[in-house]
Amino acid sequence: MSAHPAPRPPRPAAAEGVRPAVLGGPVRRARGRVLSLRWIAVGVAVTLTAAAALAVGLLSERSARRALAAQLEARLLLEARNLALTSSSALLGDYPELTLHPLVKKMTAGRPELALAVVVDHRNVIQGHPDGRRIGLRFEPPPGLRPMPAAQALESGEELLANRELLVARAAVRHPGGQPIGAALVGLRRSHMDRMIAAWRRQQAIVVLGLVAAGVACAFLLMSHLMRPIRALRAGIERIGRGDLESPIALRNRTELGLLAEAIDDMAAGLRRAQLEMLERARLAHEVELASRIQRSLLPAGPATAGAFVIRGDQRAAAEVGGDYYDVLRLADGRVAVAVADVAGKGLAGCLVMSMLSALLRALRNEFDSPAAMLIALDGRLAESLQPGLFVTMFYGVLDPRSGRLTWASAGHNPLLVYRRATGAVERLAAPGMPLAAVRGGAIRATLREMTIMLGPGDVAVQFTDGYSEALDSRGEAQFGMDRVAECVVAAGSRGGQAVLDALRRGLRDWAGDRAPFDDETLLIVACEQTAAAAI
Image 1 (tube, rainbow, N blue to C red):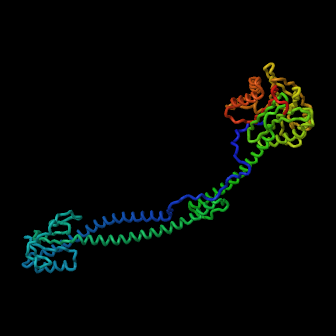
Image 2 (image 1 turned 180 degrees about the vertical axis):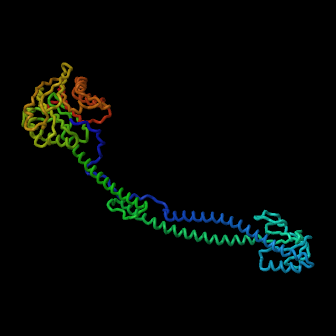
Image 3 (image 1 turned 45 degrees about the vertical axis):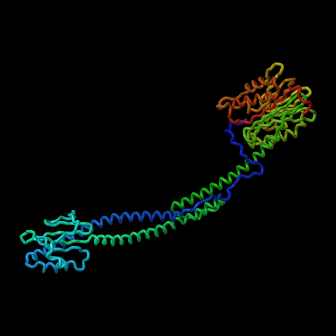
C-alpha cells in the first residue's frame, strides 16, 4: 500500500516491566600501588639535572686538569729559568755554594709542594741545595724521570721530566758568553696538583648538589601546582561513574587539563542525552511490544472450520506492528464472515487504524446482511476519525457453509483468486469499489458491487494483500506479481488450503531471498474440504 521503506531494524528486546539499565556506581578493580605523576616528574627532573651536572663536571674537570697542568708547567719552567739566571754569576765565583745554598733554601722554605730545587755545575756536582750536607756531592736524579712533551716552547738546554711522583723542569745555567756551565732543576710533587683538583672537585660537587636541590624544589613546586587540577578531574570522573551527570567539573585552567575538563563535561552531557534517549527508546520499544501483542490478539488464533470449509490465515508484518488485517467472524445466522484489509501505512499508525477497523467490524457484523452495506457503514465510521490521505482497502465476504455460497464486496482490494478442483485452473475475480475513507461524503456507495460464487469440494479461494503481489526480488528490481501468486495457487491447489498457504509463503521467500519485507504480507484462504468438522 505504501512506498517502499528501508529494511526494518531488529526488534528491541523490551519486555513489560523491564527497564533498561542506567549508569550506576563505579566498578572497582583491583589496583596495585599508585605511582604519583608528581614524584615521577620530580625524579625525572632530578635525574636529568644530575646527569647534566655530572657530564658538565667531568668535561670541566678534564679541561681544568689540562689547564692546571699547563699552568704548573709554565710556572715550574719560569722558576727553573729564574734560578738558572741567578746561579750564573755564582757558579763563576770561587765559592758558589755560599750564594746558592741560601738562595735555594729560601726558595723552598714554606713551599711543601716543591720536592726538588738544585743547582749543579758542568760536572753535575751539587752547588746549591736546601740541605747543605748535599753540597759538593754528585747529583743523582730521582729514579724513573723521563722527558715529557711540554705545552709551551722550550729554549735551548731546557726540558721537562716526569715520573709518577714528580714533575721536574731543567734549565741550563749559562756563561755570559752563552756556554752552559751548569743546570738548575726545580721539581714539583704531582700530589700537589691532585690536591688542587680535589679541592676544585669538592667545590663543584657543592655547586652541583645545590643545583640539584634547587631543581628538586622547583620541580616539586611546579608539579604540585600543575597536578592540582587532577584532583578536580578525578572527583568529576568519579561522580560520572556514580551516575551524577548533572554536576560539571569546577575547574578553570588554561592548560590542557582545562581542555580535558571541558571534554569530560561535554562527555557527561552526551551521556545524559544518550541515557534519556535510551530510556525513551526502551519505553517506545515496550509500547510497541504491547501494541504488537494487542494486534496479534486481534487476529484469529488458528484455522477455523465451518461445515466442509477450513479457513486459514497468515500474516508477516514488515515492522514490529503492521497495518494489515484479516479476520474470521461467526454471524448469528450460522454464516461466517471473512475479511482482509490493508491500511495505507505501517507501524503504529497502521496498527491503530487496524485496531479501530477490527473493533468496528466486530461491533457491526450482525447488523448488515450485505457485504456492500457493511463496507459502506465502515467507510462512514472511518471517515469520521481518519485524517485526509489515510484510507483502507478491504475485502469483506460472507460464506454460507451449508450451500457453499460466498458473497463479497471489495473496497479497492486485490482480486479474489479461486482455484477450481474440477478444471485445475484459477479464476481471477475482481469487484469494483473505492477504498474506505478515500473520498468522504458516502461516494463509495456508487462504486461498490457485490459478487457471488459457489465453492464446491476441493475449491480454494485465496485473498491477500499487496505485500505478496508487490514483493521485490533479492536484487530489488522485479515484483512477485499477480501471475506468480496464481501459479503458486495452481501448483498446490489440488492438495488443499494448507498446501496453498505453504506454497505461497515458500514462493515468496524464494523470490525475495533474505531481503526484509517492504510491506505487510497477509493471506486468507477458504478451502472446501470434505473432512472438515461441522462447526466453527
